[in-house]
Amino acid sequence: MRDQVRSAALSSMSNIAEGFRRMSDREFIRFLEISTSSSDEVSSISYAAEDQGYWTEDQASQVRKSAEKVIALNLGLIKYFLNKRKK
Image (cartoon, rainbow, N blue to C red):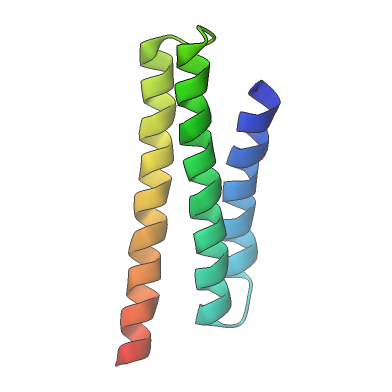
C-alpha cells in the first residue's frame, strides 16, 4: 500500500511536469487530467489505509487534504486553459 501511494503521488507530480513541457494547451490539459486521477488514487488509498489501521485518522486526513489541493490546482488550470480556448 505504501508503494502504491508513493507511485501515485509521484505519477501525479510527474504528469504535471511532463504536460508542462508539451507544446500545446490540449496536451497539458490531458496530463493535468491524468495527474488529477493519480491524486484521486492517493486519496482513495488513504481511506483504505485508515480503515485497515495503517494510518491514524489525522494522517489519512492530511494526505487527503494534500491530494485535494493538487486536484483543485489541476482543475483550476484545466478551467483556465479551456476558457482561454473559448476566447
